[in-house]
Length: 300
Image (tube, rainbow, N blue to C red; front, side, top):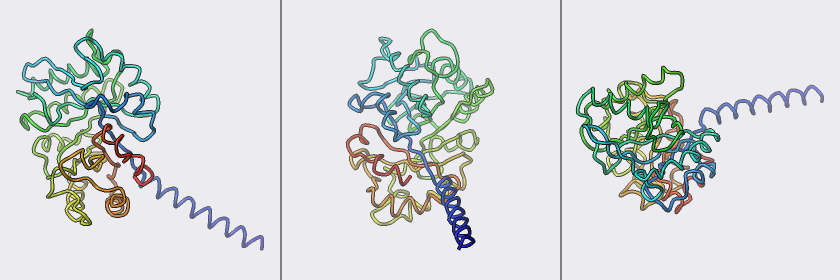
């Protein structure tokens, strides 16, 4: 009897270890975009939900080609009256919880453009000095040091984003890891940052599987999404690939996936990839309305 019990306990222990390992392999993160709606709560409140591992501050929509860089955080703060420096303590509180806070550059509506490799170098220097580990008298978020830069490039041209990635990556050699992330559209390769992604310098790539019917989920049919997912995870040299989704049906023109479909059909089909990183959601405001992240958190 004692021998059987020992064997049973050993078996149970082995199964538990295996289950823990499998869970560890499949465990994903949730990334969220915050900053484009004044009614989505503060940054500190966003991080306090415990639902997110990455927060992208959206956006720096004006930069490059000699323009004075300008951030736009909708109704949250006024960057031109020095009103965004109050975000410094919020950023630090997020980071204290282990959440990476990124500055998202670009966006769907902005004035950004890199005219040359030297222009890319100047933009990288500006980002380093004003948002990252450098020094500037005019840091919009005060003394908080962001974890990296998110490329949400949806306009301008497709030139010199690879240069910008290389210049930014160079700052990692100064001691602190500078993360690079990107939010390309799911048609492969992405029209804007496809070339930049080939550098292999990006840590996390949250692909927008919405507003793109040829590669997004259709009701009950995961084939287009699954095929696109396989191409992204096979051909893009990034640490992790995320499934980018709208957090509610009204957050995008198309591509919303109901919670039940995501957890029963889509995630089981893509989580086997070694590059699976989790889910990215647009955006905090819509997530507040739908409760999407809370509903999917235990499945991601």
